[in-house]
Length: 331
Figure 1 (cartoon, rainbow, N blue to C red):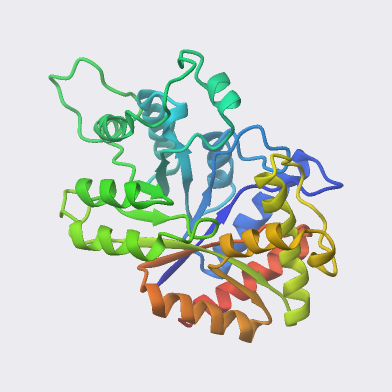
Figure 2: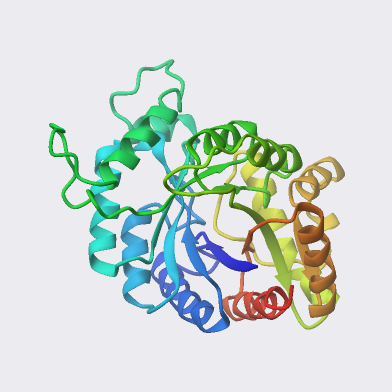
């Protein structure tokens, strides 16, 4: 089973974006040595604690600093962009780095509605995001696919690059679309686990073989907070618990420092909601992480697992992903 890594280029409290990007470069290089198959980065906007907003730019940098690991978007939020320009950007990445580039597509804006309107200046005040998503995906795949001499609009770079396209989702919608188009599917179970089982069942049941895939290929996302002891892993996890709570409360900021007892910092209702969102997680010592990841894999039988984990200290983050690779390599 392949295992991959999702990085949001976190900006911890007490640090700056420049250091965050250097940390992501270091992590990607280490991940390549640890056996990770893909290194994906996600598009978010107007969030002081996330530095991966210009996702395609950062993918190009990471690809230039690594040699063999696949590098891609997990994902590009397609409502924010013209499909044609995404095709040009990722066609350029493929021209520079060969068959190492992945393009995961999401339907959400990856930000608040005011920022979404700033991203899309022509967006009407009451317009719904994502209404044209299925057609945008089809158009984008066309711009990346074989050259059609009769087409009036063609992407250069882009045409003939055949950059693999994934559908990302946290609901049943993405599963249905990925199945209909015969594309690989990645579920955001690291923050929205509620529909995971149903989404995988629909995707596998309704999948239509295509020129891209002859059978379903499903990836699930999991958080990992691994350390030498259970206590230290639990402490590392408090960073993401605080960050997730602040995001839900409309107060996003830099990645918080860990705390000794999360119950002293979040009210019981907020903490319960955060913990429910982080259900697909593995926390603690290598043995605890092995047990929890084994249970997740056994229950959902994914073709691939992509892990993430918002950890304040860069050294601790490196060690967590190293432990996760050791565990996942044996599953």
